[in-house]
Image (cartoon, rainbow, N blue to C red; front, side):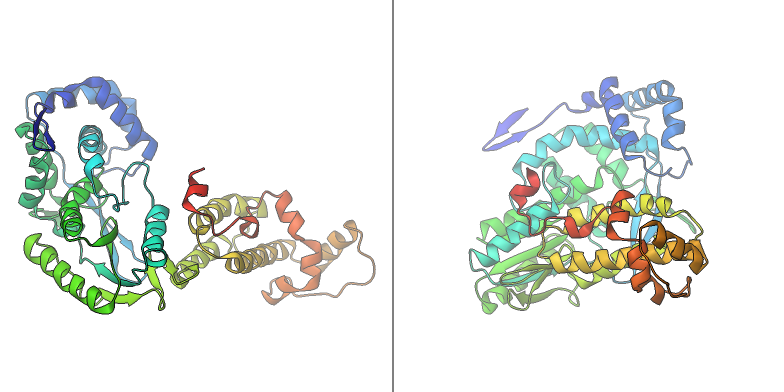
Length: 429
């Protein structure tokens, strides 16, 4: 390592890639993530069954420079707002090498990234990005916001530009060549193999760090101009105290991103907004006094719940609740940063109604519902209701037979008992 000015330059890093303990540690992280097989069809379990042999081969290939990554497997994931997100799944062996490379590079680059960059960085989160954006607007009164949208950012990163940024900190030619091999490994689609002359496919272990290295060039440019920004991966907000100031920042940032960095700004989605209209960012809407959940996120949540709570599934209620709990817990843990007491309460009431509808369908006959009511100590004559009807799930009889307490005893996660409007400091604690 040498120091040039205030910047440390790292040499002779490639030898660390040949350390077997490093590759073993990398595999443990890959195993913990438990991703899908790549183009070779080898699963994490199959790789683990022959771990010693697989690592011996990797050490040999890395040592004699014969290692060549396989093309990544292209997978398309539907987006909430329509369209698809293209992911690339590397083979397990390539994920191990990428993880080892990430473990070497991350401590070199991450400490010097822009303080308002939050995506895919150790110890940083979307919650922190939302909190920083709220602080800029509410406390610093930078109430005008440029919401930048980059078109297919990961797919359009220019390889030479990226390697130039890496080279500012890493002068090891072998390590740089390894990065280029990953960038140019190709993509396998249904139509066959495609070359990758630009981009770093989402899904690769190393891709988020490479994207951050690339976009940090924009972050540092923004800092030099005195712009306040928040960036989470390619989701960028630029703050200003006036509409004209926001317009100037939008023009300057668009020119820099396109002309200097070779990226494309999506002009249809990029726009200027302000705190009074509400700023949509990372699933929430930040307004003057409140942060609320975006409507499309509530809809996506309800769609997931519907798939898990179909009345005709025939599964026991306990099995449904077991599968439902991670969805409820994940939604609550992410969005409890918002002011969403009412939303959580209404959603939980809807979830319980769906569960009551399932149990009524399983009972089939009103007589079983009546038996349950008498077991609970209710007296009198009970009406016959249609057990397969969605309306019946909201009836007083269903609520009496399947009280909220009943679902608690079945360990259903309760959204309406989650503390909301949590600060980032409280979340970290």
